[in-house]
Amino acid sequence: MTEPTAYAPPQIWTWNKENGGRFASINRPIAGPTHDKDLPVGKHPLQLYSLATPNGVKVTIMLEELLALGHSGAEYDAWLIKISDGDQFGSGFVAVNPNSKIPALMDRSGSTPVRVFESGSILLHLAEKFGAFMPTGATRAECLSWLFWQMGSAPYLGGGFGHFYAYAPTKIEYAIDRFAMETKRQLDVLDRRLAQSEYLAGADYTIADMAVWPWYGALAKGRLYSAGEFLQVQSYSHVQRWSDAIAARPAVQRGRKVNCAWGELSDQLHERHDASDFETKTQDKVEAGKAATGG
Image (cartoon, rainbow, N blue to C red):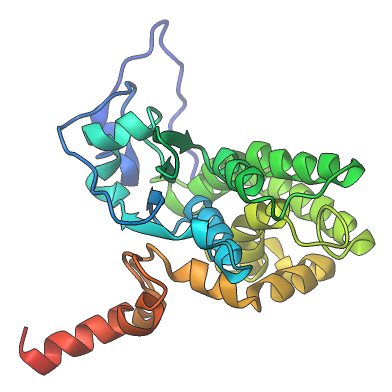
């Protein structure tokens, strides 16, 4: 590990565009749009603008699970938002999510379109709208507690550990140790809960699992930040069991592909507008079609 030069914060902070590292082109200290661009609108009641990061995957899993239950009103168009290109700063996107983060949802099922932003809010909106994956009574409180646990904990995993371990231009031992310790503590919290319960809220699979799995399930399988060995994730046996059970669900397997633009071509469905797209429009089939036509 290398230590940075000693830094004394000035009395007033100023923005240095050259000090942003990998994300310098899209990070800035002000909100609002950077350019005018309308969002596309498809034929379905729900319009999702997203990318298959852990936060985006939460919502596409939920939508695919609702469709698997037979909720036809959950049909959706999923539009790819390329955050590395700054799509989230277009005027249309900012109108749906003033925080310029994916995912963002426009619910056009009623007479007046309703915007919903922040992944936990979208999960809760859909659960209440369709009466699914949200338990009642005391179990409801447990479900919401784990949902909001994820919302509060994941920034320490992503913006904390993930940033300093995988992305920061300088490896800072103190920062990596601080957030590795917290990430392992969070994994232990989950492992202890899942030693007592099949799913986070109890015996049933809920939006709490859908929120936590894309982050901590991926981490437990070594797919997040290539940090599996570093964090010794295999030692969390109950998280491993839970992660495998969720990964085996067909709706989860579909949801992971939506708005994905990296990895295996067969796992990339850049946009989703119909259930048949999983069979005909994954990127391996798109590329094969181009090759066959010389495109």
